[in-house]
Length: 403
Image 1 (cartoon, rainbow, N blue to C red):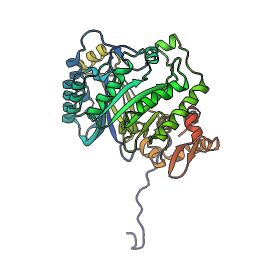
Image 2 (tube, helix red, strand yellow; image 1 turned 60 degrees about the horizontal axis):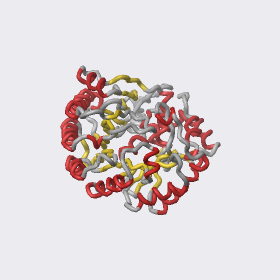
Image 3 (cartoon, rainbow, N blue to C red; image 1 turned 45 degrees about the horizontal axis):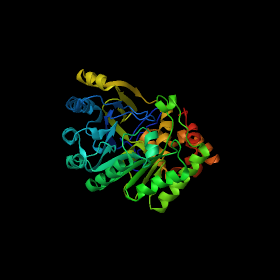
Image 4 (cartoon, rainbow, N blue to C red; image 1 turned 90 degrees about the horizontal axis):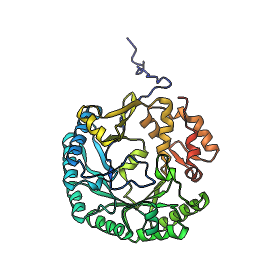
């Protein structure tokens, strides 16, 4: 028997190199993919398909519900913090369809009170009654894909709406929702600095709660990749970005992520969960998931083609690929998300979300500090201004880390 002065120590659990151990699971979001749009934009590399004829709305809603049910064992008991209807163009669905989906979601998972529920909409698919129906169904945040208010640039982008329809969409959204996002793009074909500023000033006149301001990039497997348009060079695009950021700051918007600006308190909770390396279950054609377990992190992708997806759900096999993220790949995946946040993340989040000790990337953090790409303290991992501008250089340092 030990004496009264003997201190009994708890067994020490050593973590072997290359293993993942999560003390707690991260917050969980739900992403619902609606794959159809009226017309495929020439710059778009998302899983979207032109709607030909009437949408199979009822069949697709039923498939989404079945997909969610089949995924329940992997998320059992975990509350859902946010829901995001993305696409494609989710606003092509009827308000009744969104109502049915949200009712089915609430019946199958614990949707937290006050959860952020976002739906994407494109001008040209806007009806006041439809927007009011989305709000009545439970959607509390709308994201409007304006991209530009210049007729010439809208035509160059292949958008189905004109400038007046874009303005009408913003006004209709504001009449129905207390929180809206407006998507805007810059460095467009034939665009000059004053064009970009004029677009932003016009949108700011509506004072939306959130703006996503994207640099047009030419992605593989797009029309623009096959037939590249004449766009501003890198120096002009960088100057545009800086000028837009200055104007947004002057109007009180917080630049909290690479392309995201919000009035205080209106940051996108759903996207913040992505960037903080939270979990998300994706249902729908081509949807991606990241699901954590105590000893591993798994990524999944659903079948992309809507018809194939519907067939696979009916057979109980909606998942096309599923793989465990190797421990040596987790530092890059974490940093790829977290370093998009201009304020970075708490240092402890790295171990909480990857299951790896921060010491596993100490050498890489040191190099990032020495090259001026990151500001690392005991409390925080934060990209420097240089790191924000040269994000790819920063992320390359964390590829295939030895953990």
